Image (tube, rainbow, N blue to C red; front, side, top):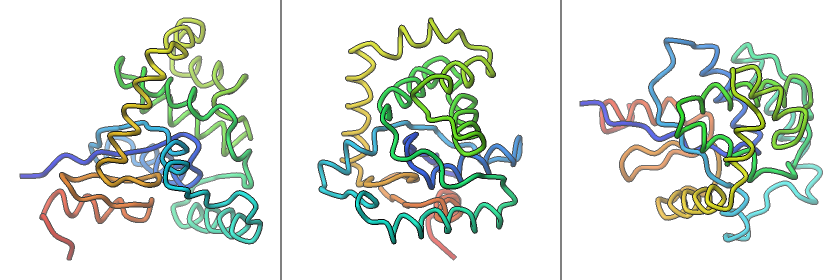
Length: 199
């Protein structure tokens, strides 16, 4: 029996772009994942893990690596993109509301397309209105609900839940108690969900 796979993502993670866009390219053939937004910055601060700030050589590698991997997947991205995000929590609170209402995947996909295709920073205008409008959601209604203290608390709870499972970065994939970190571990997570092992 195939186990479910939790896709722990945080809008704000650059490498998550690769996972989100290649799942979009796969369309109906994409694996069935449970989309789980969280605040990766909350976890990184708690673990004193700030990977790219004040590290220009590492940041330059990241952008080149994303460009190479995007080419491998035949994805069109423009790098560097705006980073880090000023409004990371709000972008993910919108995604969390989307999970409740059934439009999370579409919102996240459109948000990453705008971020890595047009340089529009998630969590800010015009990216919010553009992404929500493209998927048929009313931005005013969504923002009213997503920016509430209750939704902020829920995102914090989800982030703490992810950290308790052993998630420390995004994207991550959870299969039971097993955690696979990084876009390049998606296939490993799917294999584990299917066979309970790798190889």
